Amino acid sequence: MLEIVSFTLGPVQTNAYLVADSETRDAAVIDPAWDGHIILAEAQKRGWRIAHLWYTHAHFDHIGGAGAIADGLNPLPLVALHPNDHVLWRASGGGPLFGFNIDPGPEPTIDLYQGQILKLGSVEFEVRFTPGHTTGHCIFYVASSKVCFCGDLIFHDHVGRTDLPGGDWDTLVDSIKTQVFTLPDETRLLPGHGTETTVGEEKKFNPFVGNSALG
Image 1 (cartoon, rainbow, N blue to C red):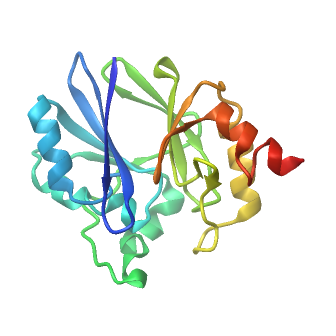
Image 2: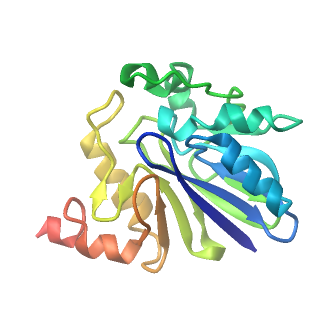
Image 3: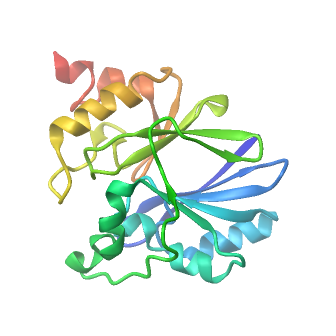
């Protein structure tokens, strides 16, 4: 069974998610935003083994805790990122542009792609390629738990910004409509910032891409 522990960390209040199969205790961190020692301590308290870091995208506020997590693990965790965001990762997630110099942690070794299945014990995470916020943005959908980790693609009553390098509005909207709004309405959306929502809620009421926006 999937267990989820959420954290809101760092200078821009980014959501990080520690996820595990409760039976095998295999764990991953989705977007280790900041203060990696806090995430690591929670995993250790629960007896979970972090073996993976999975990134929805490579902006600095989503990878800023990776170095501290990796420093506390042996062997190093495997890092998954879409190849389109490798350049952004190598630029420390764009952090220096905002005055933040982060340790990006271990180099990504797993290339994410549309339809890929990542596993924690018996729990399967479906990778959906969702560019628009960055060129390599992806989301992670767990059908068995009716939950989707959607990064900075869509938020409660809002959507990801497209004014940073690699952002594109039309691409973002297409990603939301084809990869999020095609999920069951009851699917929980766990975003990179702010409170959780559901697919049905955003389809109806999101002022940027929902029915209200479409007239």
